[in-house]
Amino acid sequence: MNSTPINNPLNTRRFVLATDLDGTFLGGSEEDRRRLYGWIEDNRDTVGLIFVTGRDPEFIGELCRERGVPWPDYAVGDVGTTIATVSSETGVAPIAHLEEEIAARWANAGDKVKARLEGHPGLTLQPTDFRYRVSYDLDPDAFDRSACGIVEEMGHQWLISDNRYFDVLPEGVSKGPSLRRLVEHLAIEPHRVLCAGDTLNDLSMLECGLPAVAVGNSEPSLVERVLHLEHLHMAQAHGAAGILEAIRAFDMHELPKGY
Figure 1 (cartoon, rainbow, N blue to C red):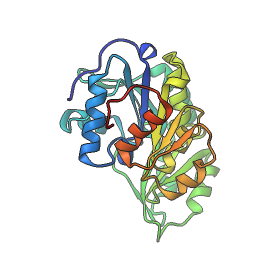
Figure 2 (cartoon, rainbow, N blue to C red):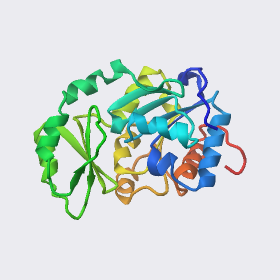
Figure 3 (cartoon, helix red, strand yellow):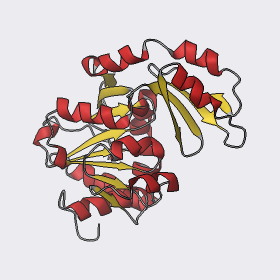
Figure 4 (cartoon, rainbow, N blue to C red):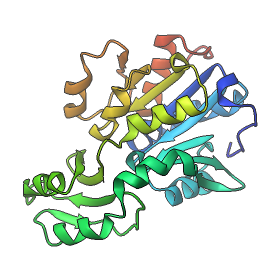
């Protein structure tokens, strides 16, 4: 199953799945994942795949090489601060001109953010050396929300997701805007793209105007924020099965009987 995507451009494929990983593409039962991944690989000439994730490029490459997950064609990683091509030969390669504005807004602020939030109650710095973000594990019982004000004072934005992660991002940069930038760059018709997510760090992606699905295991805080969206399908099924449910509901691509 772990094959390399074919070379025809995404704007020629009937359907493009832009999906979060944890809890969404990687969510649901093993059988659900097997069914979705197998269908994608069997239809790579008409199905494109973009990972839109909080995970870093190293994790994406490792996931595809070692866990049998289909290689995406592109990735919007690091909560929207990485926009990259992906292949089994070259791994994850950032697209420099699409990241220029992200880098400019961040302005090498990582060390300053870390210094201001060092020792802040309820925050534990994640060890990965991200390029245009700083991320923490969050203890909700110990967390002092004054961290949010500190981040805003510095001219950046904060994001709490799944009540256990705290991300500091460049102002105006998140999954949704970066995905839209990539879709426009690739000249993909927006109605062909399905966004899929399950936590608050997927909110900007689900709100960005493309067809969207919140899978059945989505966190309640996300569900509250997206229930009103006319372009969104609220799935009953969890994870991978919720994605298939939305493809069927929007009639974005043919699916085999029983999917």
